[in-house]
Image 1 (cartoon, helix red, strand yellow):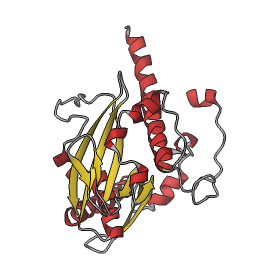
Image 2 (cartoon, rainbow, N blue to C red; image 1 turned 90 degrees about the vertical axis):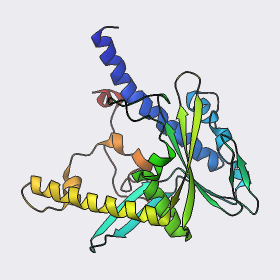
Image 3 (cartoon, rainbow, N blue to C red; image 1 turned 30 degrees about the horizontal axis):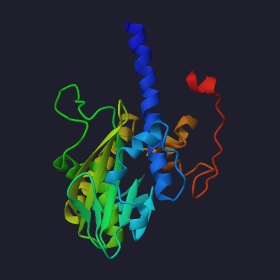
Image 4 (cartoon, rainbow, N blue to C red; image 1 turned 90 degrees about the horizontal axis):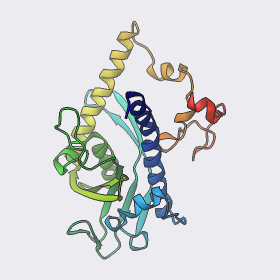
Amino acid sequence: PTDAEKAEKKLYNSLYRPALGKETHARAEAYFKGAAIEWNDKPGRILLAGMHCLPHPDECAEVDAEGEIVIDYTTADGRPVKFKGFRDLLVRAPGKEIALNGGPFVILPGEWFLVDYKTTFTFDFFDREKTLRTVKTPAQLIADPQANLYAYAVMRDKGLHVLRCRWLYLRPEGNPASEPVDFTITFASAAAVVEELAQLALELTEHVGAALGGLIDVRALVESLPKNPDACPMYGGCEYHHEHNHGGDCVPPQISPGEKLL
């Protein structure tokens, strides 16, 4: 291919792959909420490749799909930080264990179990330095910021000291495939990571303020930026959007397909 063709393909993939990942996540959420699923198109086949690694909703005592996470955290030096997000799946086993494929793994009776889906172009991709594989190891996930924030919120809310997790990597390209990675996070280790992340967030806020000529209200700065309606549905949906679960007062301008392309 020519350089122009390569650039065109790269641009296409930069839009196509995230959209495909979002739709695959949406199918999983709908499945665990009891909706009918189309399994024969691309997102359906991708999810189907990992279904043997997931608990069946009928086997679970409780199922929380795409649950919102809010962490109102106070740092060790007394400064407030808020983290928000949406976890993919949290389930609790009934009075008997749930056996999962994808490894010799069971969810113990009454145990809470955290799952996150990751669609990735290939399981064997490495970064430019050839040091980081797309599919993270258990050791990497135990230190992962997202995994610790999610696990911290679950353990805080459920009164747990330990939480077992499964990050399920789904490969869309070629014949869809899955690779589960299991790991365990303790509340003490998660709290340490959250403290570190909170301090980093505050440090970044101070850097932004300093770069703009003094201390500023970063939230006010963000809200002064131009609206990007393409971002409205991201990360579970903007909380200010009028169609959000909790309802908001923001009605963004409609954008035509041509305007989006531009």
